[in-house]
Image 1 (spheres, protein in one colour):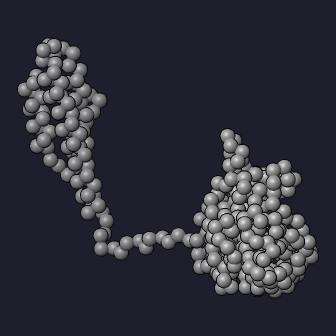
Image 2 (image 1 turned 90 degrees about the vertical axis):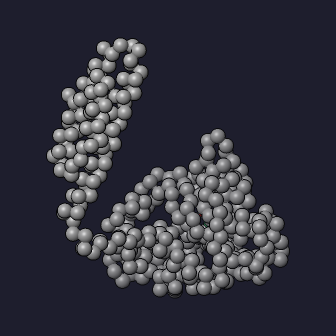
Image 3 (image 1 turned 90 degrees about the horizontal axis):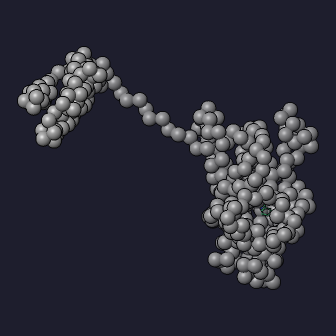
Length: 336
Ligand code: PHE
C-alpha cells in the first residue's frame, strides 16, 4: 500500500500537459468523487494502528502534490489560452476617468469666489460637542431655537452630537485666533429630518465669517452681492429680516432670479425671488464666548446649503440624486 502511494506521487509529479481536457481528466482521476485520493482515504481505517501515522503523512503529501500540480497546470493553461486568443499588439482600453461630484464642483466654485476677496478655508470635526455646536453660539441648553435644527445625539453621551451646521467650525477658529479673520467653513452636516425630495439627513454647508474692526451690515450686503453676481450672474438681491440665535440683526438672502421661463416661474413660485442663504452680524455674546473683545470688534456671518445652490444652478429637482451616486447623473458633470 505504501509503495502504491509512492508510485502515485511520482506519477503526479511527472504529469505534464497543456491540454485543458487532459488537465480535467487528471483532476477527475485523482480528486474526483470516485478518484484515487478518496479511494485511499477510504482504506485508511483498515490500516494497522502502528502504520497509521506513516500512512497518514504519505496520503497528505500525495493530496498536496495533486493540488499543487492542478494549480500550476491551470495557471499555465490560462496563459496559453490568452496567448492563443488575445491579440497582444492591440492598444489597451483607455482607463476611465472619474468625475467630480457636483457638490464638490460647486463647493470649489464658491471657495474660489470668496478666496479672491481674502477668505481662507477652515476645517473642523463632524462629531461635535454641545459647546461648539450650540452653547457657544448663543444657544444655551433649553433654548427653544435648538429645535430649529433637529439633532442626532450620541445616545450614551448627550454632550456628543453630529454637527447640525458648520458654524461650529467658526467657534473653533475664533477660540484659536484673534481678528482680523476671514474664513469659510465648508463641510458635511447632519439633521434628523425625514428624507424627501427637498431634505436629507446629511447635506453640505458652506459658511463664512468675517471679524475685524468696524465691520458693518453694509459690508455684509456688498460681499453677498459680489458673490451672487460671480456665481449666478445675478446682482439683484434683497435681505429679509430673520432670526438666528448667533447673529443680530439676522437676515435671509433672496436673489432675483427673474421670470424669463416656465422653470423660473415654477422654482420661484411666480415671484422671481429665490432664497439662497442666511446671514447676519455676529452677536456680541458669541464673541464674548470665544474671548474676542466685542467692544473693539464686530463681524458678519453667513451660511448656505450647497445642495440647494447646485439644484438651482443645474436645475435639479430632487436632493436624493446627490446621494445615489448614479453614474449617469455624475457623468453629466464631466466637463465642469
Ligand atoms: N448656521 C445657520 C444654519 O445652519 C446658517 C447661518 C450661518 C445663518 C451664519 C446666519 C449666519 O441654518
